[in-house]
Image (cartoon, rainbow, N blue to C red):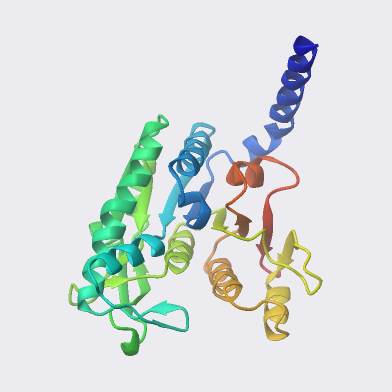
Length: 288
């Protein structure tokens, strides 16, 4: 009986691999930007699963780019240092003391943890922030928010050089201002800007929800930009989903072929989205 069950498992595995072939062919040479955050960063086990997915993506011909957040880690360090932090409309007010901590945590602890996880799975990852090689130049988003920046210019050639060397870029969402000051960038915003600069085939936004839901609470597997705008105006898309869908629309307008808001709590979410028919979240395309 045990051998029969194992044979069934093997057959199911072989069938899954066979069905993935057209998707593997379709994404050969494609650029896929993944915004890492939420559950996928919550434990070493979850991080290892994500890292394995990224390495597999590269092994089958995709050029992956990882852009990460780190809000909970920043909050923990600010608490340890007894530095108060406030939020305005969901964005962290970042004064001079706070931005030092943000840079230390994002470029240091968080970034290197992701790099090491990918390298530990047999990949070759390099960590950098938007300040390295002037990858991301920023302007101040709002004086009331302090050192919070909006990407103004991206240098994609830095990332293309890494692709040519079979290296996976892992980017901390920081940028440099016109006078060399450091700006903190919202992780989703940074990922969208990077994806647009690369004319990426896909931008995958890992979240802790199943996807974009309609008025009845059902996950919508595919949407057009016009639907997103209408659902936002009608209040169906609300709260924390608004900035994610705004990032998706901006990325598509900037040249990204499609954006997927997918459930990072699901194991192998990126692989399910890219290499299976049913996917793993809500795919958003332009109206045309």
